[in-house]
Image (cartoon, rainbow, N blue to C red; front, side, top):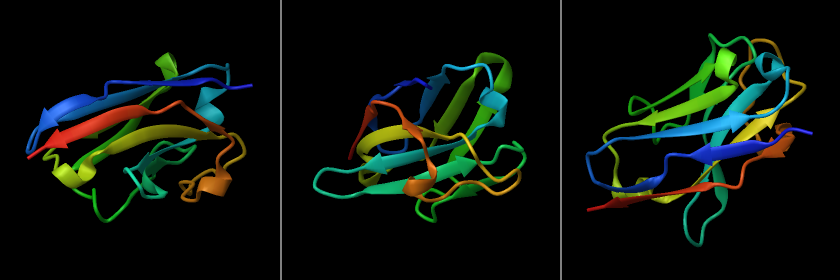
Length: 127
């Protein structure tokens, strides 16, 4: 069983920055591939960013490329999503997720690849 707890959401003006963190339980965090998804009101949950088990490989949705950065701290069992140049369309509930049986070097991109999910954290960007 893996527990994921997100933090860092909030209200920010357009152009601002936020840093989301997700703390994972378990002793084998370094073996997980991690990802971030988001769900805007009335819309389906969509992929935002992912990092492979081999932490050197990342992948981003086109809508956030160049503005968001995903990273991990294996010593702290934490995955971080640094968000900058935020836009009102980034408003959503953000979820982190863990893939316990990932490819070594390919980030996990699909929701069905992930085994555990956090409860989500709200990000609201005002115009």
